[in-house]
Length: 179
Length: 86
Ligand SMILES: [Zn+2]
Ligand SMILES: [Zn+2]
Ligand SMILES: [Zn+2]
Image 1: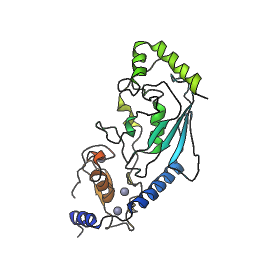
Image 2: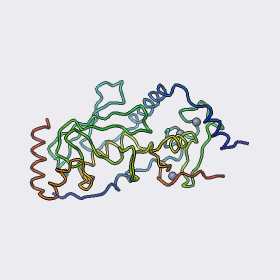
Image 3: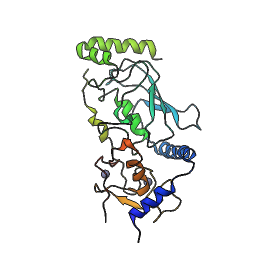
Image 4: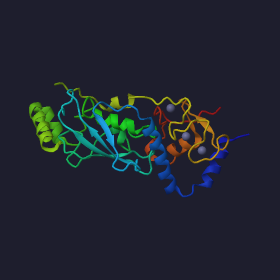
């Protein structure tokens, strides 16, 4: 009869060979499958590959609509999928300078599902997909703007103390940095 | 213009991957084996958690054991992962 405990021990003893190459193949395989089945992106979002053979690095273009405080802007994000995907979360950088409580001036993005070590329960999971990330980034420009745990404290404080000034600053950044 | 301030709670509810026939971790169908194995069946068994979610044994073990990030929880529902013994 098949014994689970025995099987676990056997497997632990076996170990794995050439893990690095395997991880890369696996990432490629997972991404291929994901992009093939990726049907719908949020309105105003599009993705671009600099090199169509390199699936693990791509850009997201985001053009928020009228419901967004960032309406009129166009924001570019770089998404890097690490070798350890889907156990490790992709890394997201905002390439466009933006005045946003959850994106700092270095382009770091604070989105809970991208966190590897989530103390709370909303961090990365292997069941999450690239689509989840794109929807997550997109919602940072709508209802997921988080003023309570900001990355750009100055922006968050300004929003709470002087909303008009905050919006003016958002516009100023858009006209300066969005093409 | 109105901005609704929300916590992080909204993030988790977009969708649950319907995984009746696919392992949510390696995303292979349950009648195939996980990515580390060559043959489905006894060599690559399926396990059910007490939360009733199912995975390839290899996949869920890799997640809960090899991974401090996992908090030892089911990647579908985040309940503590405990194998349901049959
Ligand atoms: Zn699996
Ligand atoms: Zn296996
Ligand atoms: Zn579960």
